[in-house]
Image 1 (spheres, helix red, strand yellow):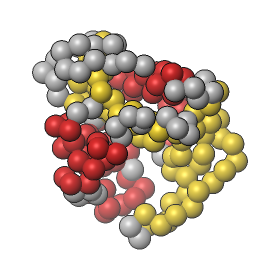
Image 2 (tube, rainbow, N blue to C red):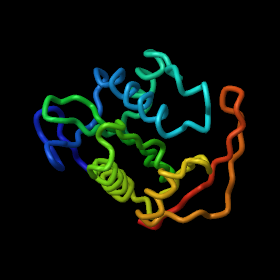
Image 3 (cartoon, rainbow, N blue to C red):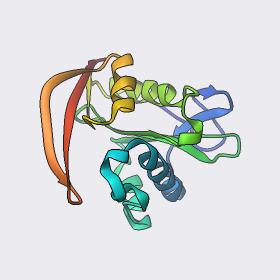
Image 4 (cartoon, rainbow, N blue to C red):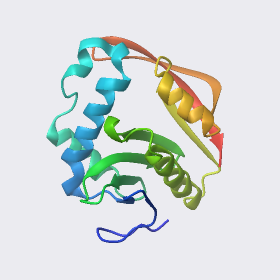
Length: 173
C-alpha cells in the first residue's frame, strides 16, 4: 500500500484525507488518544482524566510504527490529525484505531479501518485481529459491523492498577 506524504491523498472523505504519520504528528496523535479515551473508556474511572502517556512515549510510538508496521492519520483540511490507526503487518494485528470525539460518526473510523485492512492485505495477511476491552461497547459495535467476531481468546491484565479483560476479535481479509 502506498500512501503519499503531506499534500497528497489516497482517500478523502468530507475534507478528511489519510496519510502516513510523520514524526511531527506524535503529539497530535497523543491528543486524539487522550480525548478518545476520556469519552470511550469511562469504565477506567479516574485513570482517563489525565494523559496516560508522555510526549516522549508518543514520539516512540510513531517511531516504532515505521515500516513494516503502518501508522496512518486522518487529517482535516488544515492537516490537523483527527484520527489514526496503527497496524502490525508482520502478524496481522490492528493495534490501534482512534478518532477524536468531535469527529465521531462521520465515517472517519470506517475510512481508517478500511485503510488498515488494505495495509494488512498488501502485506500478505489473510486475517486481521485485535484486542478490545470487553466493556468498550462502542468499539465492539464498530468492529462487529465491520465483520469482526470473537474467537474465544481473552487477555486479562492490569492496566495501571485497573484489571481489564480484552476480547480477541478476528476478521478474514
